[in-house]
Length: 166
Image 1: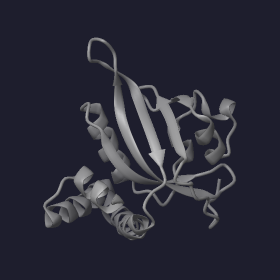
Image 2: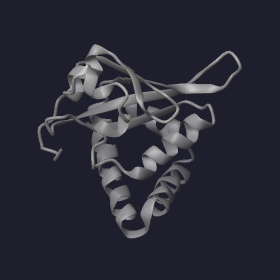
Image 3: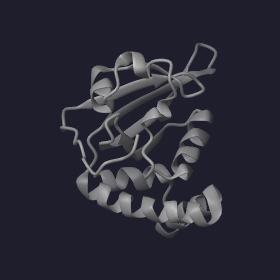
Image 4: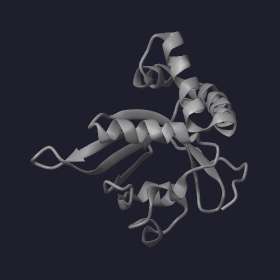
């Protein structure tokens, strides 16, 4: 699906919830997830969650996300998602690993809500720079750009993301 310039905005009371298995395959999506994505429940369940990945999203952000949740750490992020009809929507997301009684990861749980508009201006500009870095030198160059930003601010990734959410 090609991306359009049509943005769908979440309301402050909207919450998108989804669950995946350990390989990122959707096992659950709430009504808001289905509605915002534009896909039917049958089109989402048992499909890779990246079915809604927007091409404006740097791969380095998802590499960081997977690296953190596989270490049983939560992550906060701003994500631009692509709906089935080509429209897009920004979310402020929290992804956490789901653990069994033996502390083994059995999947991932994601809750998304309306992002701060000022934060989206900041992050979309930075994501564009990360994408350019990925075109030049791959995910590692994009990751280095992110690390440089965090080091210059003296914060962790989650601290940076939550600080601009406000």
